[in-house]
Image (cartoon, rainbow, N blue to C red; front, side, top):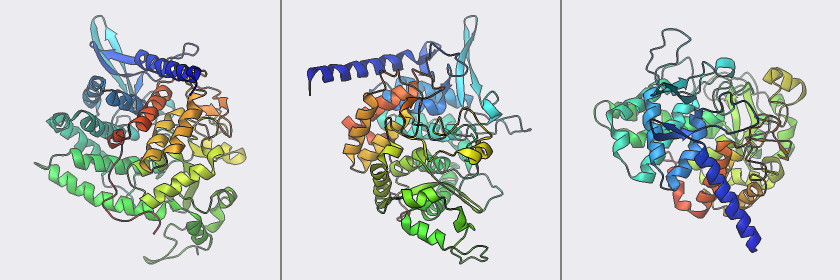
Length: 468
């Protein structure tokens, strides 16, 4: 490697660390989180707050660097922000909900935290994923530090149980999946992801597996563990059997009969073959497969959503065979899913009349931009971790090289636009913290594969995969 190349990479690493450290928020003299972005050219809006989902890659970087204090402070203080309301009306967050974001305010010398549960968010949508990511981060903190006492504190045990109460509540539903409104997770605008989106189902599965490790069996802890075990098996079976898409599955759906009645029927969700989009028939390679974006009555969303599929690999929700099939899809459709900046959030974009109907003519989610087929550098850490876990290290190396060739000179944008991620996002913030942290975390996972234990789970205990 030439000296100039080495110096350039050292500069990139130093610059990324500088931006990450400058993003740190302090509360009562202690580091507590990171701001979403430090863009000097645009109004801050809520980008000066710490978002729970945004902090995850930053937290992983700090844990891997042995700087766990900020993660511990974050876990302690956000637990205090957790809602304990019994929701007397529809304008209050439900008990157990974690905020989408928070910021530090002051009144003279007194500092306090202000949490946003969605009251100020666009479209006023509360976050579903915050509480799930919080549990996963608590587990990662425990594994990184060996501090077993934090999660065993009564307030932490109570916080985990409140989240499980929220997620495992009896509902008007026949499925083990969680019903989710549009805009309630990383895709936080209207994008046709309402109902049972893959991202939340996989995070739900991961959070339950983490809860089972973190909960103490004494008191009512054993009852919660039993409830989690019951739901885990059903959720695993449901996602692996009904969300999985490969050519064998497509051929089955294509020949489905509609309006079948009874228990022993093939077309349990009444999916009509006419709903199979033309693009997927030609796009899906022989040796590849993936988990569909959504599933419900008469509905299968065939779009590929990166975060849910990559998390399915990390959590072992996808078996080894299915994990390899997902990574094969990235190989065969590299330009579509990686392109000029890893990783495309979903494929393909919705366009034309469908875009008008599904997004409500959202000018930010125009085709191949933002959530509607944009490329997000933050997803690089998930792609790298999944590639390393599946033994496809060369894919991680190539993706990181692509990211390094652009991110620093582009000032770490929030997202990229275009079919292949060639353009900096039209409304993307620069100095986006999770873009910075995504690169740093990816490089750590590649250099030190033992750190995968922070975000991965052992092969699934249920003993079956997704392509039965």
